[in-house]
Image (cartoon, rainbow, N blue to C red; front, side, top):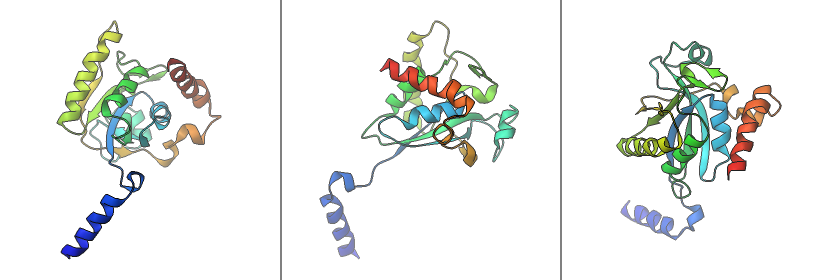
Length: 191
């Protein structure tokens, strides 16, 4: 058994870097409709996947319809899996502050309700520290106070299949053409 483990370890250290397993970290963020945030982060270097979902509330196994009532306490969020060798949690947060207005309670553009609130759900003490430092730094960009909620992530519920990869799967949907695509274009213009 020891020989098998030693051989495996020797094999892993001789693999080229691209063949070695990628370390993955996650960030869970909400800033309005998850369709927008999903489309924005899917195009970022180092992001491996983005999953739309619900978090920050009290109801178990929420549905889109239930979350839209505002009574579940959940926000529409995305869970971003990223490779920390290519990007960082801090870079993810930098982009988060750029793509929404973190000073409006329960609202992003025409999307109104507590499910559209600005929220960072942290997975450990380090993320909580980095999120608070990032929020403090971002405040200098805003005249009114940032009201983004920062709280520990208790449970993430993936949204229904129809909400995943929404922008890519529905390029001519009115929400995509009127809201998501202009946000993506605005982001490109800022680079």
